[in-house]
Length: 272
Ligand SMILES: [Zn+2]
Image (cartoon, protein in one colour):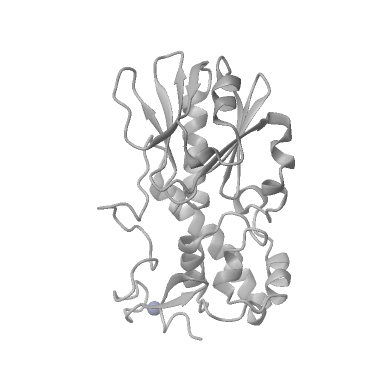
């Protein structure tokens, strides 16, 4: 499932693909992706537009065009932007497409349809409730250890569940929370309020390290594979590795269900 690094990858790719190009036409078949918004509006307002800027906040993409149109996009569980060369066939599950003046097509694919595209005015993107409700973005704002400690101290939830709360910190999901807790040596089921000031400091740097590590693995290319996809390699240290030896101490990695999600952890490196 796309988390902050995967959405950042999409932001960087879209800047490259759309930069300096004009959108010759835009269209989208009927689908759940446009729930709460109008897909016909998507075609109408984007035709003839060119990119002004793209920003990412947490797992959201904010896309602004020079003529004043804007898009808010969430990749959901399986959403992905792809570039299709001129004349090449479109891949399956395309839910929206932008044909550029170069003949290239920039397409939004989404098999499970949990993603969302909404048409707005560019100048209102940052005031949307979805964006205003987000906590600090680790890459944009950094991770303030004191603030993190203060926010965790007020929560009785398992620390793993608290880290995935987008209002506390924007962009972490199951993978990044699992990886960061491993790096910081913190058991995922510990109450958030039990995290000490020193642990919050370690956790803050672990979050940044995990995000940077993932961004580095993904690279700067044009295509990305999500770890849940068939035949994908698992590049993570502990996520999805229950039953395998811990990369640090060799103890068998265990798993626990928290907030409806499976969390892998090393019982020795992350004692309860
Ligand atoms: Zn270990």
